[in-house]
Length: 262
Image (cartoon, rainbow, N blue to C red; front, top):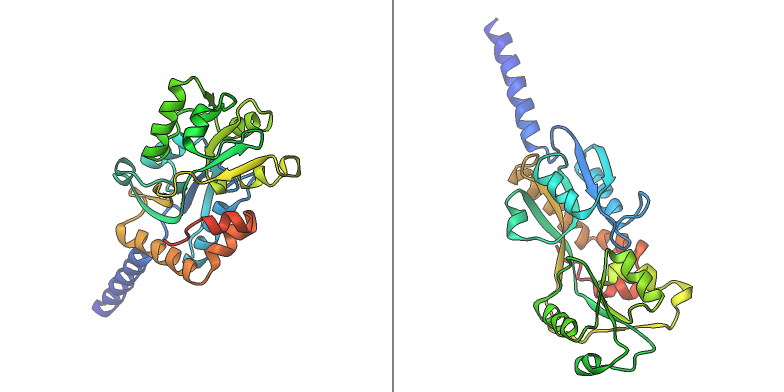
């Protein structure tokens, strides 16, 4: 009898140990995406492929995945309604409730209508035809935000609700310039209708790159579990899987501008 109970206890402990080593949350993966460039569009995108590949490598089951507004994804992660998010900028506040592991770094470029001849910041400030589109509530690098403040004082800023609104205004020339990331503007800029109509400039060469990271909720992942995801992200960068995923959805130029180093 003692041997029987010892065997049962040993099996239970082994099961618990195995469960503790698992990188998967007990209730499965509950993923929240948001619309940004080629990251997610109608169930497809580089963020979708990334999550699916990581889930496959780690043996985790996806039980829920959907698209939500950016702020809602963050709130749902904070309150345990979701346990995984993507393309998230790490901040101290977000790190209070989630592990965040960057998988790309990008910087805002300037999209400029070809009807504008200015090629320096001073020329852009002085050019009467410049109307700068800015997504409401969006933050850029400190230098770029300071530049937008100067544009605002000159009455040159037009607010957009989101990136689709911004690109629509650029297409219709309601605005003639904007800041945007390559992963965001890539498909829009490379459409046949815009061929040769918009230049891409980097007038802030020393501007800091912004990270986009995988977000794992503290409520669902221990640090040990989360670090297994980080290890797989690093492996995907080393074996070029990460680059292949981005190359499936972005042009070679845009992929080259991304820093894919978790």
